[in-house]
Image 1 (cartoon, rainbow, N blue to C red):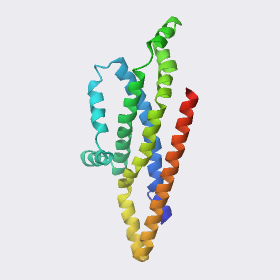
Image 2: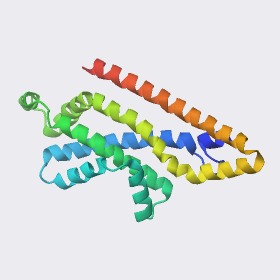
Image 3: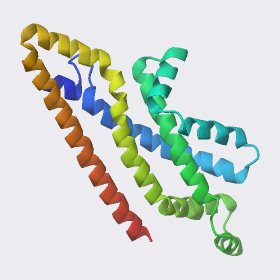
Image 4: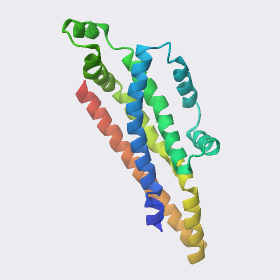
Length: 213
């Protein structure tokens, strides 16, 4: 039963802890890509993107669980998809703003130097500005990714039905103490895994940030 809680029921895999980690990694990666496009658009046309900036600012102030429930209740998306989209939007609202803030501070001297070398605007953005922005924002992104991994605990709402089913099966097959021990053991594994991932991510991000500078 612990296996079911960690990777999902046989007919609902991936699930449990595996689903949470996969969702965090995929949503975080997509948020960086979308956040780069968002930051580029905001710096290139700040006036035209004010409404988008306002929406993301509002989204940053809304708890992740509330976003999940709002999407689940107001759209036709399955609960699993609602959770993933909510996680992506939540991550984008933080990553996009961090990238926008750093991209906006790109040194004018570097921009002028690229012009003197005859480098096109598009090549300058791809070769110089975006890498410069990503390097400078690594600390902020690392902090967000650590928080994101912790916040995937909120995605256990995706597994409420699964956990309920497992608990019912356990209660039918064994005594109450038995299935409570299983659930406590699964919770301990969840916490240990997330703690290990956040420590590793924090270490790698800080080390790479120092190396990049």
